[in-house]
Amino acid sequence: MSEYADPSVLVSTAWVQEHLSDPNVRVVEVDVDTVAYDHGHLPGAVGWNWQSQLCDTVRRDIIPKKEFEDLMSASGIGENTTVVLYGDNNNWFAAWAFWQLKIYGHKSLTLMNGGRRKWLSEGREMTKEVPKNARTSYKAIEPDLSLRSMMPDVRKALESGSAVLVDVRSPAEFTGEILAPPGLPETCQRGGHVPGAKGIPWGVACNEDGTFKSLDELRKIYGDRGVTGDKPVIAYCRIGERSSLTWFVLKYLLGYQNVRNYDGSWTEWGNLVGVPVERGAGS
Amino acid sequence: MERTAWEWSFLMKPEEYKERKETVGRWEIHVVSYRLGDEWICTVDNVSPGANVARATGATREEAEKKALDRARDRLASTRVRPA
Image 1 (cartoon, rainbow over the protein chains, first blue to last red):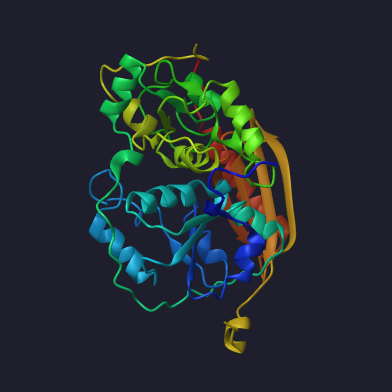
Image 2: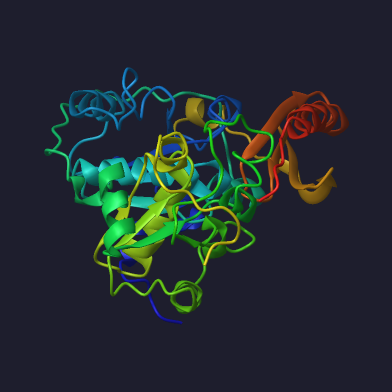
């Protein structure tokens, strides 16, 4: 089996188990379900709340640089610490955190393959104790916005065909049948997708146990759908976390050079006045 | 680095972990339940796209699952489907 383009970005649950007490490693849990951490997490793991700690809490945006530095410092993370991110739902928000840590230039960064679900299913040890880490004085770089697309970038890609748009939501969200994942609040005025976007749900990249599929499988899955890396790619979903996972797969596992996450995603596009929207299965 | 006895005393292993899929209305759901210490935990997500819909705890698996599934049914019932 071929190796991922950048194998350093993934570690196994067994590797994490062996490094739980490693002072150069900090394990961080980020869940969709923001109370999951309180009901048990990996020993020594720090918990981050995506709703209050991984965003600008006033305007809709990624976490500002100063708040990011404060979060990293409070978590006992230095510029050279290896950060292992994991979470529920196949690492959706762990990937969201990964994307933001890359934007701010953190170098040693991995996802735990399979996330929280795999750890639990393997019966590995958990705790409810919250670790007390010595504070650091973390310094981030200026944000690398080449990893991010904003709405005008998507509009330009739509009009000029300069990038492949990948909609990673479920088929029912893509067609416009539903405006949000079943059981979740609707956050947009219109259903459908950006015209011309390819509907490739995030989950096609994962095995049943939550781990990522092999390089060969991923290459075939995305290649068969015309996402080959020869053109820039912009991934989007509803709020940007599922597309962070696909961004991670395309950029680090497949090694595509120019991949961006459009975190405004459908909650932005589906609320805009006057932008084109396509319904149904698409072209 | 070795763990101290104090640190070890807080460790628990998830036990009797089970996963299954079932259907509520037109939606397929993924139900996970396990015991951690004295607490049973149940989470429910929608299989497509895989978002968390409900979580509950209880003194038994049955209690945790019933609470989580009741919440999940309520939330899933609120999903509006439009012609595509």
